[in-house]
Image (tube, rainbow, N blue to C red; front, side):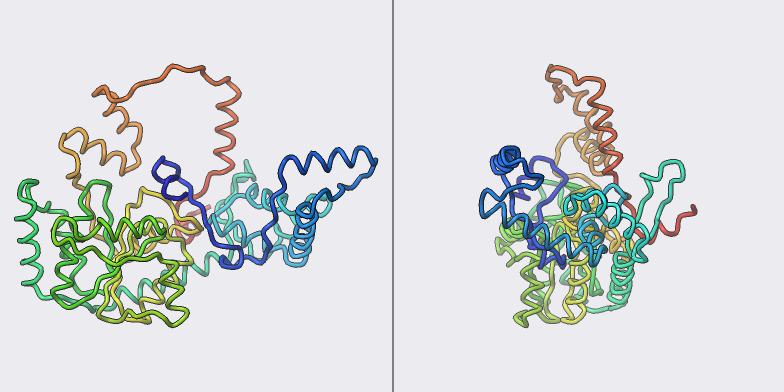
Length: 416
């Protein structure tokens, strides 16, 4: 599902883990279909009752779970914050009320829970808008503590000067790659800089590149260098599909056809927690599509890397998908550690296409589309225009759903 969401350009992801696995103290509510709901309403009307009648066992189970969840929220309202911050590191009050409404139907109870949460010591105001209180941005103390903990772990790992390689191995691998890719002009200057950055001493390294800039090829060369030094290289990815891509084509196609054994980040962390992890200081882990990893799992990964003494390579594109859960961890880590940047597009042959790809990578979408339109590659399909009310509704919905994309600690540092 997540692969096809990404394939068709949707900036959302589905988290298949249970509430328990995500640390949320709630029960998933069974789904009631429209047919069941309509039957309940008809029976209620016939019997003249103010309460819904249970038509099926599924309907009864739904109300039982809803009631138990309601008791949990009344007993500990901050559970609502846990649910909201699993997907948004920062949020607006409309997000909180939406979740309250999902579990609390009674208006009186709704107002009670709403008031308790507004006065909760767990709540932190990041940006206050006196003219429009609905646009005020919040976070929680737990989210702030998690971000601070991640920063501390990143800083400690950044000081570790391990996993160095011999210079002659670097030069030999680069020379070999230049010969293999001679018809493409060899490795770009950006790629060579990135290769040196990744294989030099350091327990954790980052590389960020726009689409088509040659991250795959650079990693292939790094793979050659690490193998020559006796390191075993493994791949990690946020999703199963991404790990398959990493194993089948990210490493080994152009140079040695060897591939790289890969797994999902979730499986890796689980194997470590269960004592089944076989990695050691002679292992190198490559985390692909790091921008999709949330704050909590990034912190667990870095803690595992520190304990096992392995080297971690973080690969991603800051303009690609945001994490399934909350927290822009990838941006935070690259900000603290620094990174090698791949900004020269080599996938496209035409100069204007390369420029457009760079614009897309910098999120200058309008300029990039204009470049394609100017070459006749954009065609407007005639269709009925929406009414004047519809765009306004869309804008209002967007404003309600808008999130602060910056890091929490940076938002707190801003003057009010």
